[in-house]
Image (tube, rainbow, N blue to C red; front, side):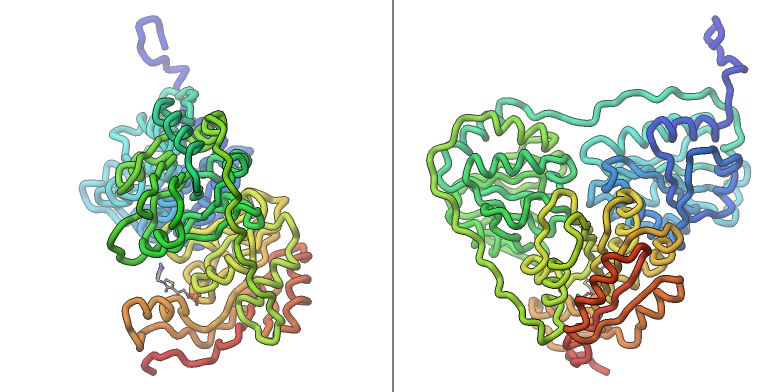
Length: 539
Ligand SMILES: Cc1ncc(C[n+]2csc(CCOP(=O)(O)OP(=O)(O)O)c2C)c(N)n1
């Protein structure tokens, strides 16, 4: 600035230079995207130290970025092509919003001078298009305001509850002049109000049968050790919240009680006998089916620790404390000593499977036995989730990811993103045949990036979860649930990826062992028993 406070001409840079300087200072040096004409000038003189990760469709760019951001515990940058790219991406933007994954999403827009003429690829009301599944969204009024919008998008994405933000940028903005913008420090963790927290700690200490319900917020805020310490201190049984998208407690721990169903009556039944329910980093509760009656057992008191004010506001019973989970649980650990109480009964161990039949449960039992101890599971295999809880226990922190939204098409690209973010880890993507087809092009990205991902396709040749769900509606015949004639090995090989098909239980061990030690990506297609059984559906 000059002495008169006027912008100093010497201090001017292009919008592109100012924005990439901000990206660099925020650590956003990997850009996931799919380019088009309205984004090309953004990448003129692409600076050193940045990499562009090409996704073959925009929803994959968002899914990969989501996995990458979760794996690195930072934000990820996504660039989309105008209205159509945002449209393709919306399903996974919805999932990133539910996952509370911080993403800074930019999208191209036509040049400002021709916007009045509805030009080709023009995005009408661009900033409104991704709402309500972005935390903040804007198309800056002037080119010179683009850097400030990017900075604001990043700070908001990283605030709790984290999530995607969106900036629409006209194509002619990138070469305009602006003053550079210095990055600022904006703190990212919020501590709890001490009064309700002390009250919760006292109630927990007094309770005769406390239980803890853990959700993805524990993993997001890295409160794994603190939650184990709290459960052990209080001899509290630990349940996983319904549809949790991350692992938050060792599933072989003596206090591990199991997984709550997304069903009100079944939650009340599972928690019956508890007099204090401490919900950590989870909604209380996620439901998937209609339910009536009480939300928690009679006589129980519920306290929720969450980083999400919206969740706190709609929680129907008990009290909620807004806090970063690690800070909140640490504070609870400093509460009064608990009354003496006996440990809860251990969770029943599921029977060992002999392996005559190649079921999904047997596949999971073999995966649990053969997978490298430090491997990471990314799952999108809906009807296999139940058997997974019994036969593929998740034992270590940050080693399980799935989507919190219920939207298919996230798991395959998210596995690629997790592998990119954690190059030392062996990532195993456990995918249904139906689910994998929403984003199958991400196999190409895994190959191009040469990531150590093993894609395990549970091929039952149908949308089995819908048949299971049909019982809830008393339906005996379904439409549109058969998936015959998909050759997953052929698809993988067409991208240059090694692949093997397993059709018999005795062949499974060799195939999995090869895949888990292979130095390149590999796909294993498992034709599970019953894959050719007809389910009731009209021909
Ligand atoms: C984007 C999207 N479309 C449709 C659905 C509905 N849906 C839920 S589970 C499911 C079947 C998934 O099939 P598959 O991956 O083969 O797993 P399976 O059910 O056989 O275990 C479908 C279509 C959804 N959840 N998300």
